[in-house]
Image 1 (cartoon, rainbow, N blue to C red):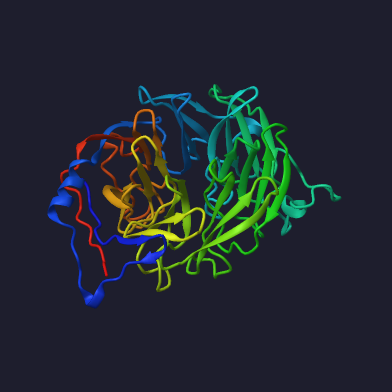
Image 2 (image 1 turned 90 degrees about the horizontal axis):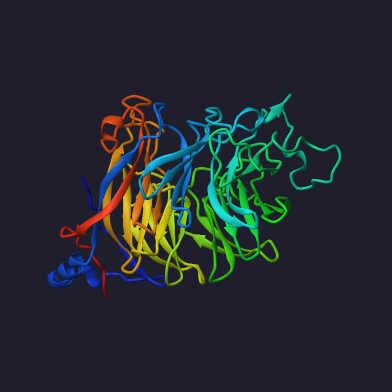
Length: 457
């Protein structure tokens, strides 16, 4: 089942194309048919059941094309789930135990103590590794005081705070780790709450890790050579956390989503994309993201031709009850290239250079959760796949990753239930009660591609 959302607002390098005297021009039928004949349709090809325990809470996912594996940060199972992308079967669940165990689901406060969270793989001198952020393993407050964040930005101060395995951590595993494997390294960021999203700069051998729930929020720069935090940067103006980041090989810069800058904490004020130099470990540019264009930028994907797709999680004005959009930003100028009306509510987004599509996991889209498929060349939404009905619950299909080797798209779908009436989805079929990872592939030409209204002078 698919749903199309037409009113896609086009922008060319930040210049809005308005209709003159209210005249609305439609694309010619011939050009629309020509575009339609060249586009793919993404359809459900298979589903993967993790095990008999319900998949309810999870975070970021990742595809390693070298290994041919998909990785999911799975809080419900306190694991990193590893899927073979050739057979689409579970290879293993990496479940560290004892003092090495992941935080899992910590319901109060929601998610900010949970883990694992962000996940990625990289090639290091000793082989391929899995890096993931985790929550603290001690309570964040003791007698009303934090025992973790006291010296977050002054690690040489005295007295010292508890370190590895106690406060928010980054855990590293060999890529061939199996169930019960201990991390090869545990790196403390000294945050009182979770270590969340991360990205990798292979040129400078750095990981950027965000502690999105601490006060102030902060980022850590971690050496992949020494497994040590070498610098930290507070971002006190991030009034509703820190979200997805990316490193770009073209500009050799980190890009970091700030959902809201100096606002009330509900994504009702402008967000920003910070450009961060790995050389100086400082912010060198700040691109404003207008709340009416993209409220609460969370997901981030580097695309072609200077594009960055922003997955916008909240509704726009008035007061987050307005339209939910996504936006494409120019990574050099910060100009908004395109706004996709009605396709908001995204957390993780991704780009597949093999087929030229962006994918957005619209887990907060209302009233239905969607998988959005966006053409990076035309900036148009090719397809919106119905995922499930949120039903007033917090269960969200908010994670997505594409495999350029197979052109498969992986979307974890939570188990049916939770709240009243609760999340419901038909994607997992007979496994609805446990949830699944839904796998989508192309199945031919899209002969029902939406017509898109363009406003022209």
